[in-house]
Amino acid sequence: MRNPARQGRPDANHGEIRKYYEDLYCSVVDSHELGGGFGDLIIGCSGLTEITEVKTADGEILPSQQTFRKSWRGSKIVIARNLQDVVDHVQRMRAKQARI
Image (tube, rainbow, N blue to C red; front, side, top):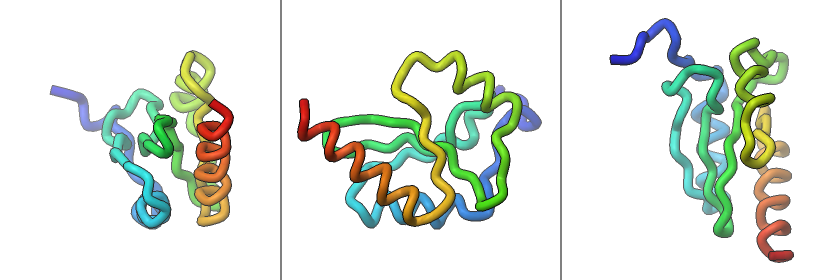
């Protein structure tokens, strides 16, 4: 069993950010409980899958998250703090898919 002390805890705006993605017709898997610096949400949009780290307006990236981001070999992990961040992310994903 996983050590609860190592699991992530959601930021105050976690549910709100998740809903924004869902409202924009993205698939969303909540992954904040994985811990180890892994991102909070796995987003599926236009055939692409990306990881999002949810942060409040003044929230900082934790050391474990920095380490994970540096070692991750997939697409860049996106930080979402508000609706505009989500909209921008979804637009980038859709534009990227259109180029493929």
